[in-house]
Length: 231
Length: 231
DNA sequence: CTGATACTGCCAAATTCTGGCAGTATCATA
DNA sequence: TATGATACTGCCAGAATTTGGCAGTATCAG
Image 1 (cartoon, rainbow over the protein chains, first blue to last red):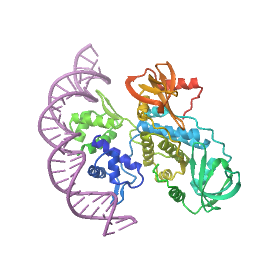
Image 2: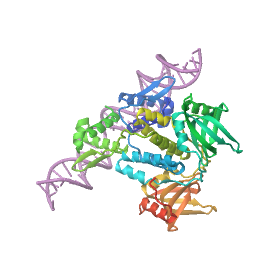
Image 3: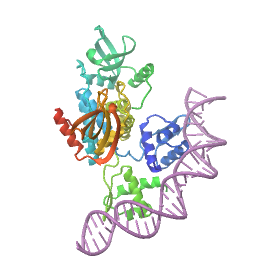
Image 4: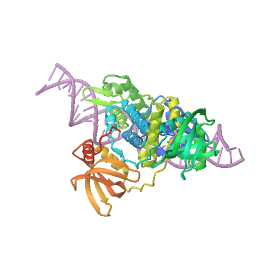
């Protein structure tokens, strides 16, 4: 790969990592020695890229670099369409619409041949197993998460025991067969997960919960031993 | 001026000119010989730039090379992130990278508060069942589909019976547990599906197959009784 | 203090780049 | 249909750049 291609590549790699990355990692990713990587970073900076390097930390690309990203390569279009198809197939109605609308927005800015690639994308999603219909509106759950509002839940656990709880919802996890709401349970004073098909009733309260959902998610991940990923 | 800087320059010069410019003029503007200019144009094209050159006319940069700013409602951001996370979790390495890169590109042209929404998206994808590792490179299959090239397959069916076939691949379907290549089988003169984990070996031929993959997919759908959907 | 990391200068080998030339292909137009 | 303008390609040899390794310094977090 020529140097000029590599520089654009490097920019894209930097865009992908939202947190600082060490030079060694970057060098590995683009297949070049650390010495050359330093030179490449310097080149990009000389051309105006807002790349910040801190000793002991790594590099991070600050937004607002003069050159917007290049257009999507066909594989990326395929990946976007495949993901949206999965959402459209497995998600509830509002989510399905959101996926379709998002694709339409992207299509609107694509040059014609890429728009064709989007329409003609050949990666299909097979139908999943029938997911039990939730009695609760999933959009309500998502909104509560997004706005960091407390939820009042009527929940029926695996053994059929009903309970009423106040939870701080911070994430919704999609599995092949079930969906699980993750939250901090005021009753138990601990993290709890709730299968959405076992939620009998949910009501979003006006009261916000006192922590950031990002912080809750991070803490939950640490307890579960799940490392952070950028995507 | 180094070559890599020059290429970005050339891009700007092309963006400035709204009407076709001859190679000679471009070469003058960036201070390089005509021979080198041709090479530079070729480099940019190789990196995806939509530069059109017509003999007797000149070069013109078609719109759609760079990604313009984008806006999405929060639910659509969530849908895109969720879909990309699914692809990143269930796809092979190149597909995973493509999904991440696509999101990174989108993030780069989002206004800051939406970029935060993207990072903070609370819809997670639970890990899927372990998919058997394919002995064939999935990227090769996708490329054959994209370029409508014939594939030479060594396939071992459910009963363990091996066969060699020439197929016209037109789609790749993702199920929860398996992936299936859809194609027209020259041997059987009929549509056939091939589980990717049973493909022993695949080789993409130079020969294109004589139909459009869109048409094959449509025909296949009709036979299967699957209605067409936009996403 | 220590470890991790950013960064610089130097050098010789490897690689790429460059301009020029000769030739072909294609388009617009006279 | 003939002509001029232009896009493109292959080849070549000299020029220029790039590369990786090494040695060394600086800075930051814990």
